[in-house]
Image 1 (cartoon, rainbow, N blue to C red):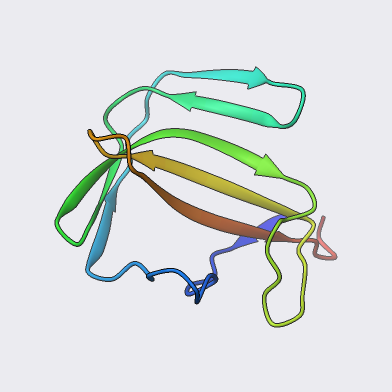
Image 2 (cartoon, rainbow, N blue to C red):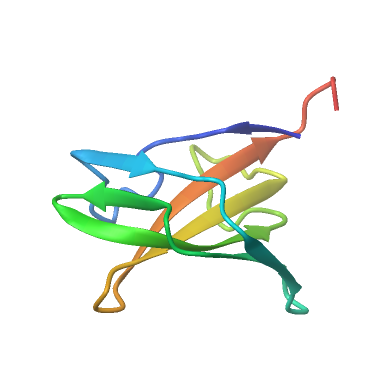
Amino acid sequence: MCSRLLTSVKPMRDPMVRSHSSFKLLPLEVLNNGHTVQLNIGNGSRMVNRGQTLELSQVHFHTPNKQVVNGNRFPMEAHLVHKRTDGALGLIGVFFEKKAEN
């Protein structure tokens, strides 16, 4: 599958503005929690949104995806889950499309 990042997917929520990310190669733990495959990430990868730093803590997958975009569903979605030090969460969703080359 190929991935395509879509922006402003959840218009009912505050879109990320003035954001940037810094991702690094880090050790990770792969976990099948019975619901999804989850990658637990060590500290070091982060995003900054509106001056708030959030550490990437995990990546997990949904198939099919949970969101509807312009009436379309995608075969898979990855969630990059970030946490602030106070426990607040930030999420980046990546949708995957099935293409002929797959």
